[in-house]
Image (cartoon, rainbow, N blue to C red; front, side):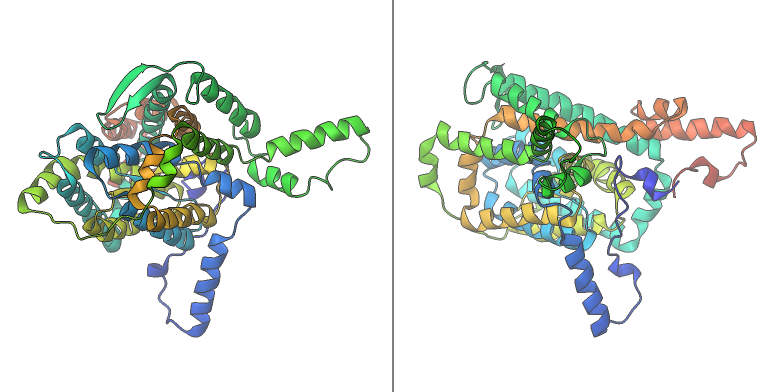
Length: 455
């Protein structure tokens, strides 16, 4: 099965910069080409669509960051600095909108446990353990073996289940109030207000009108229209029809996610005007991890997180883009967690969210990375005061459209057999059993045939 079949719907093929695969000397000509390739990876396909796409993964990122910062005193400044730097690096190397997302299993365990049971030292130990294993799998090439063994229907099942899970979470954010520090859902959200249901529904309708269902007239064609509105009005139309067409083209070219996010920031200041007086950078220090913290972090954090990271953050993403992702995930956590940064990994959900809202190049993730870097250096952990006032209904709306895009990647599973596999928890075992059953139809009984369908 070709790489094109593994990509997001309508995603163009992107040539990645695989330095490890090139056996060439670092001559000036090679370095110039390398630099040129990196700059080309950062080029925007379209200014507004790429900026809009940069907002696509904030629906999952912000709630987890708020929860860990308030409940565990996570160093938000260090987290933003390291994730910002590695966002820029991944955009430069891969040329696709590949964000870093919190390791959700570790975050869930941390939020649901007391500081004595699973505090900052255990969180950092979990991230270092997971990052170290992923780095080893990537640098040795063993991840390629895992990639070939895991069938595509199993990967699509992971993407579908996570997309549907996030969809339920997004609806919960829209309908109910949330207490992130305790990990609890509150009462029904009121209809009016600065974080009411009316606001969330209006923003959802706005995104639907602007983005539609994500069909491929979408961003590239919309971008060309948005950049050349004055020159693309058909002269044969009547003046009234031309004006109406121009208005719709302007609407379709709007950066919907960026507008919703900026609206949320404005409403955060309106809800608590005094938060602007409490800004300031946070300090950075080396994490102190005891032997007990290493043990608890590995047992409670690394072991549950590793399968999720391998399947979703590595396998699902490798099906979409590049086999080097476990290396950057490993480096990010091996470097950042020692200094108190939140454990993070690449994820198909973040890529799908940024793709949904217009992200196509490495510049998309690099621009949000630069913003995180600046915010981390200037504001640090005091930024959480703004994020805690951000309307959660709007976050739910952004998350909803991102997770729908992720779930839709499973639409290329056309047979009943593939649908049967992606709809079950034990998808890998079911896939293997079905392949064994098919041997009775004349297939050659070899190990390779059991996993036919992967590149």
